Image: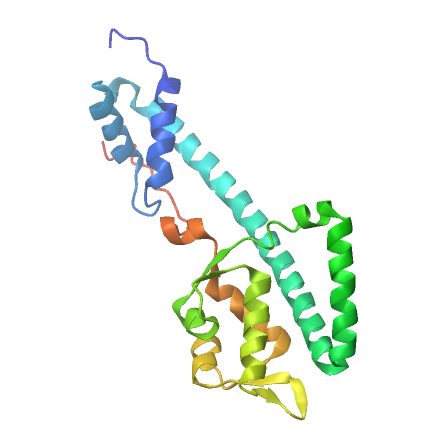
Length: 223
């Protein structure tokens, strides 16, 4: 080739292809052929080098996705803790009665007025999320924040008298709740963990993205 070989100029295109490709189906050869067509070049003289460069970008992508999945797992665990805390407070409110509920609400209002920073810190937790069809028919809305979902679920449970009178932590699921929880009874704290399967970030629904762990096949010998 008369043109000086420089794999770095293909980097954005390689990353773009890997970013949208099915990592279980894509191969080095497919990416190399795509580069040849897009740039109008013949890379056969540098087949080994370009293959290694493509593989390096692939493994870099896998490392980044693994780190993102780890961060997402930690975020979900934190959300589950917050959901459980909110459920515990609501359950305590149910047991304590209207007077204690009114006092607690008054303290929350005063705290919110005095600390704007606290509201900002909870912006992620109060973010509007997309709900599954099963959850939608229970709460009546397709988008709600996580605290709103928990409160709406408890409002539905109380309105339909679905708490076990002998143990208010146990919920006796009606037809609609069985569609969400897939069982006839569910514990108050277990409920929050299951609800996470019905609550999605807007971009997850729009992109329909699925993170995959995949093996990557090199084809240096396949031509």
